[in-house]
Structures are given as structure tokens and as C-alpha cells.
Length: 188
Image 1 (spheres, rainbow, N blue to C red):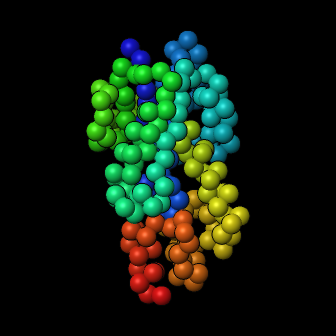
Image 2 (cartoon, rainbow, N blue to C red; image 1 turned 135 degrees about the vertical axis):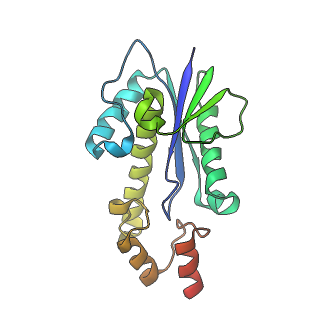
């Protein structure tokens, strides 16, 4: 049975796209050290991402942009990113395992697994690929908008990010449907 693991990164941040990955691992090329991407150091995630790309039978990324998040809400945008990741796979899976408690509408057989990013190798691999890509995007955005500190907090609503939002206002990469951004815009 061909199993794909799917996970997303970026549901909670106030800025940037939500990025999902779908991964089908090769049972003949196990990858040691797979885990929930949040439990790994940035360096270890980078190392594992290279190995996942090299050894996986198939992998793909999907995303939903800030405008889509604001139009359809973060949950639906997350599902859209997941569907896009699945559509990009070169091999069609028999079963898709999703991290979380809900699955997007799909023609695939799906299983939601709470905490799957720490317990299912395919989901862990997807978690790592998605996080490495999204983190790199936020570091690049930090160069464009240095006053916000994206390289440090990756768009999450930290005290420093909220303070920068109040001081400098929202950028085009901020999610206007999220309350802290909406409130900042209303106050200005």
C-alpha cells in the first residue's frame, strides 16, 4: 500500500502563506530521526529535508497565499494547500495520512491522525519539508521588511511582532482576516 503523509506549516502566523507538503517515503530507504518539525533544530530539519528529497519515492509542496487565506479562512486555505500538495505527487497514494483531526474533501482515502507529525514517518517528513520551505520564505521576507523581525518569529504573533505591527502597520504579506492585523488596520 502506498501511503502519503501530509502536513502544513503556518496556520497560526499573522503573515505569509500556509505551506503544505505531501511525502511518500521509500520503505527500502528509511530515514533516521524523523519527528515533528517543531521538535527538531533548524539545522537538523535542513539536513533531514535534503535526505527526504533524495530518498522519498515522491514529494510535493502546496501553498495558499495570504489573499486566499483572507478570502476563504485559514482552515479552508490549509485544506487547499494540502490538496495542491497531493495533486503535485508523481505517484498516486492508496491512503493519505493527515496530521490533525480533520481531512480536506478529496477523492483519496484519508485518515486524520492527531499528533501524526510525531508518530507517522510520512507525516513527519511532510512536516519537515513544509517547515523548511516556509521558514526560508519568512527569512527572505525579513530582508524586504526588516523592521518586523520575520526571520526570528516566522510571522507568529509574538510581542515584538505585535509591537512592530502597531508601529509600522500591516504589510502586503499580513493576513488581514486575523484579529491582531485587523485591529491594527482599524486603529490606523
